[in-house]
Image (cartoon, rainbow, N blue to C red; front, side, top):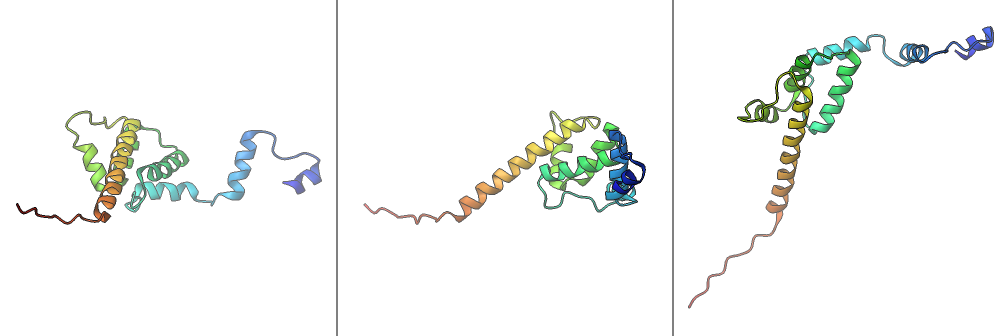
Length: 140
């Protein structure tokens, strides 16, 4: 780019679109979009040990890169990648279950369930490590 400017006297980037095109050309893999689509369409993209927040950040970056905007598609792909326990808790909610066309409500429900799960896990680790009090019997 700078060589081109030196040769022609004009910097090749005049607009934001020019910058974005040059940036993608020089810093993105040639098949980045195909890689992202394969990740989302395949069976290997899951939450795993991530928190829902981390999984959601990654998920939203991927769907943005691919350009997915259909709400039902977003819910299906997000739901499919969630931990089975979280996925089941949301899908089987007797009241207030998110619509399959409302990804934002799915995201909030998953975050809420994960936060409760993490708080409970922290509580259990503290209560399990607390010294147990020995019971004393009082004789009369």
